[in-house]
Length: 310
Image 1 (cartoon, rainbow, N blue to C red):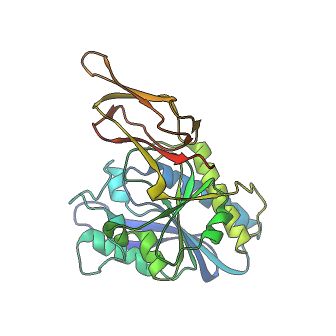
Image 2 (spheres, helix red, strand yellow):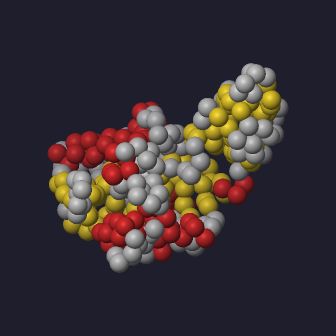
Image 3 (tube, one colour):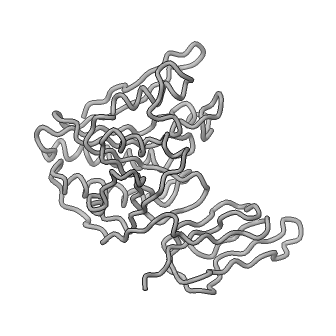
């Protein structure tokens, strides 16, 4: 294992900004794994730490194939993580909306460029990603529909679902999208949580990555084979929204099967504890996303369902 500084910005008033990387094996640029882009993505850093531990062990045993290089970047935004702020500490911009970057632009554009120039030539790119909404997710591999996505390859992770997403205008500045445009096979791995560590889900994500690397001939590894993945389109998710605002109490978790009419959550009035809404399943399916904050606003997606297969 070789630890190095992938990208650095000098600072006048605090410690320099550094993006740290861990390299395993040597040779052709086979796979790059990126963790946290945002300051609240603790789960994504944790998953990378488990992966680094496993890869270090495999390298010591000579199980990384000759001529293959694996790069892991646990955190692309340590400044924000240090101060517990989701986006860039100065102007609240999102690094994962700045790719491929611009080396003469704003700070986050320069960071995106500094990272991307170092990772754009890898055969495979894997990002431990998080959603823009607060909540828990069913484990999944997500790919942008650029015309370059490879569904059969995504099945090799062995996660329950492969989600295909039609990119919106702001998605074209994400790492996943630009990796694909620059001809890297790119995959976003979503674990159950973001700001809270879920060890079981993180270990599942790491197993899925090692499973994928083994099937691509990058490492020698025999582990958990995983699921026969179901392919779904993000546009086909069924949104179940709140009708009112208030305290939110969920009765189900991401990944659970529900039937039409099953109680999913209740919303109570903050001042009186009056039940303002009982949220029920609109149809049979699997909970793909579940809101997990104490409060919920009106007309917020409380749950997203994957319809039951006929």
